[in-house]
Length: 164
Ligand SMILES: [Zn+2]
Image 1: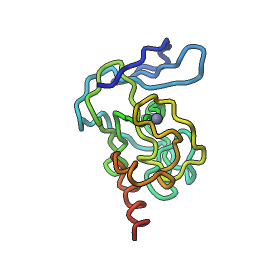
Image 2: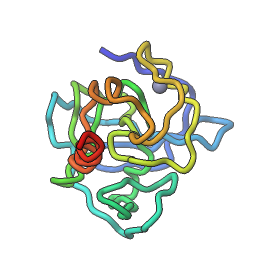
Image 3: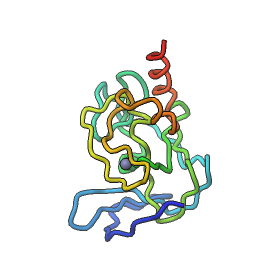
């Protein structure tokens, strides 16, 4: 069971199964579940409002040179964790629970599970015991680390190409 950190937040958006929270005195936003989920539950389907050919902080990669702005848009507030509880399946276009999730828990995903290359790697502050430190695209993370995570079919195909 992961621990939920109840840092002071302000609710800035309320949706059918989630709320956007903003940390007080900060512009950091996050998405918290308002529902219970079990392993492999489909939390929602998603699509794209816009497809870009380059990644940004708010896009999810679905294919080579295809980076979507998520629809519903509030899914963009799902932050990275090295011990994630959701997965963006970009083949079925479904957000999947990777473990049981309770109301109040922050939704998190492993950025390299969808991103092959990241223009802006960053120092992870997830605080998990398995934190990998610097978060980069899957291209720059070693295979043993990646193999501990569920990866999109696109990322898996890129890894398989490297092996050939
Ligand atoms: Zn981390």
